[in-house]
Length: 284
Image (cartoon, rainbow, N blue to C red; front, top):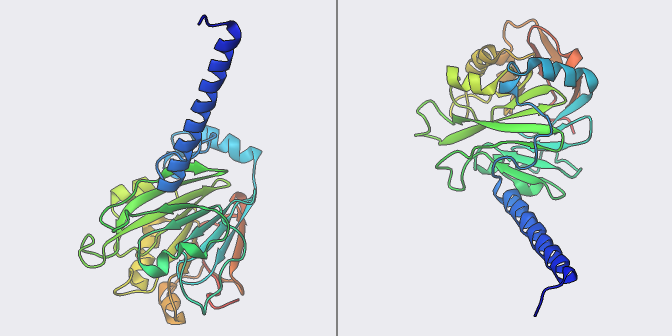
């Protein structure tokens, strides 16, 4: 049979359709696995790159200044909402005596596999799930991507002071939302190294555990970690008694207490030097 121009056109269309389906399949696989570069970066910058591209970042920030919401649901669970409505849920807890988010999520992150930090079924909707560790917790997953209007990446860390021999590994998640860099430390159990600080970049808001002892750094160690990072705002979390916060803030005159679970902030409103913002952990 002799091929005609119409036949060639039809074959080309079928090949394009197959290629499109294959691309969609690849995207689906990436969605499930949480591999690198889930979505195109769309000009977004990661916090550890901001000094390199500072001029461009400032131009972008000047063109689009918005407020974000940081809502605490107790333990290590936060909902971070961008000015465009993108919602990120961190380390979802399992406790029925604490509030749960009611809105659908776009992204869910887990710093490690311990149940109080990895209840991904808490999230409504069909979010992208980013796990900081491999399923058995033996190794870190490298996350470095942009999703919608936010950037997110991980920094490898440990759950204890013996490089994971007692409690295992831990992943720090960093988010850039409306030009505000937020670091969620997970169950950090040690002081940060110079390499980890470099990987973090310039952090504006630090979500720091202060439970102390076996589970994370102690309140006094959390205070030193905060000094290491030198954020504009530090929010204590992962505690169940007010004494932990009192020890963490001891001698600090820059402490603001909010009668509620939500902090609304924009880049120009960030204080200097560091201010500790205490949210109400038991406020429903």
